[in-house]
Amino acid sequence: MKYIYLLLLQLCAVSILPAQEPCYELVWSDEFEGSGLPNAEKWSYDVGGHGWGNDELQYYTDARTKNARLQNGKLVIEAHNEGFGGKQYTSARLVSKGKGDWLYGKVVVRAKLPTGVGTWPAIWMLPTDWEYGGWPSSGEIDIMEHVGYDPGVVHGTVHTEAYHHSIGTQKGQKIEVPDFSTAFHDYTLEWTEDQIRIYVDDQQYFTFDQHGTYKEWPFDKRFHLLLNIAVGGFWGGIEGVDPSAFPVRMEVDYVRVYQQTAPPLEIKGEGYLDAGSTAVFKSSVQANAYEWSFPEGVEILEGAGTSEVTVKWGEVSGTVSLSITGNCDTYHTITTVEVLGGAPTGDTLKLPLINDLGGILWEIPSSFEQLFDLSEKDEVLELQFAVEDPSLNPYIYYEIPGSVDLREHHKLEITLKAEKGKAPESIRLDLVDIDGNSIEKPLFTMNEQQIFDDGQWKTYRHWFNHSDQPAQGIDLSKVAGMKMYVNYGFFATAKSGKLMLGGVHWVKPEVGEQPEPLENKPKEENPILSIDKVPSVRLKAYPNPTQDFLYFETIELLKEDSIQIISMMGQRIRVPLKYANGHTVQLDLRSLQPGIYFLKAGRYSASIVKQ
Image (cartoon, rainbow, N blue to C red):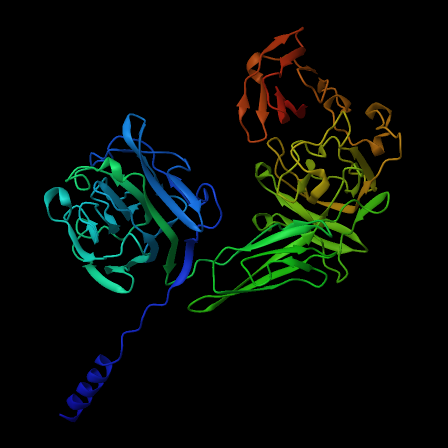
């Protein structure tokens, strides 16, 4: 008995505890400041005059200030007695679909309603995705409806497949609001996973509980908001329409949407800035208070303590942090801003292989960690590779802190060494800009016939920003890194080996200096970018790069089906061809997009460049 008595005391103690009020954070709002049309980032328009399922008499217009505008800090939706689109009246219906969609929360719309027989203003919600089917299966929530022939009576209603007005089973209640047209009131919805509650100001007058299947409760999916004035219709026009009442307007002071969980806090703004430039940073979440923090040397120009701050950036990269205070908690986030490096100060930019702490600056992407091993000795990088599937296009990556402007330093020098039989079958080098774009044409590509493996250091040189080899697909003023592909490509075979990297330099050519013709370069300095410069005569192609036609010669007699053009993605492409004789073939490449392709002719293959 003692145990039962204590248990009853505990249950009684629990039962008398006050219910905890939900804490809501503001997640979306429009205060309707400014003038002109409503904010297009938050509102779209339903447009047309087909009656909207209710035999309505108005034509809803598209972005027309006569029917929807910002005025004196309010949204004005105004209906007019005027011919338009085959209808006698015009009005507007604003929708937040795709710009404001929510599952559960609290919606508060502060509004003043129009008068006049035949008017039918509404603040309501429809499903965004219609996952249970068309109306009424996916539901409707009417936060406020008012019909002009019954002034001062406001209705809150829900519609579902089981409960809707078409079959006389709709669920709703009404409340008297005598000053509906002379004073602003808060028309409020509270929507949880188990209940819908509708209020005028702080007075709750309608409750609908979760029960049954989707036919009774489809309110577990996203909904969006609608604001409109209808004219006439099956309900609003029961007693006709008074044309002399027009124009009529609904004024909305604000729309505020709250949820019990704040959305992810983000800082919106540029991630890369020039030193001394002006930048704007914004909070992705509205709050009661904002606290910004910037690196030393950054000057706040305006907006301190608000959701949007304008600054003059300093000379160095750094972290921007933001703390916001909501109704329930304080939230924090950070973002990093890199100062763009600009052009190198000297004629040569040397990319270091290691940092001040001895760490290797070239990185292996996680997907290729099993294929490569990087080590450093005496400021020389050793890359060991074991590539079983070259079609994966494995690469290592070099990140340039803050980026660099290479529009003037467009001569590349890269120093490599490989022992006999240890060189990869192919190497390719690409640039990457701060937006992640890679250059459409590689800086250079080399196959096994072009990579020296005599154990001696060789310097390969390439110009990548002149009339013959323009850089495309990348912003050369903001180069953020390089990719070096090793033993890659459709035609490479599985191989293990080792490659030594001595250094990478970007050089600013002297005034008037021009690229040397490839055929005049000694073998040790030849980047060998064109197939027609390959020492072997097994396959000779020219001109390469080409814009229109490509000729190639082989030492064997070819059949038509043995000649293929293959894209970098492995797609086989048919192009027109004709024989000059049994060994020389002309290909028409005018239909190809610019880029890198593989030419396969019988047993032999090589890469080609289409400009």
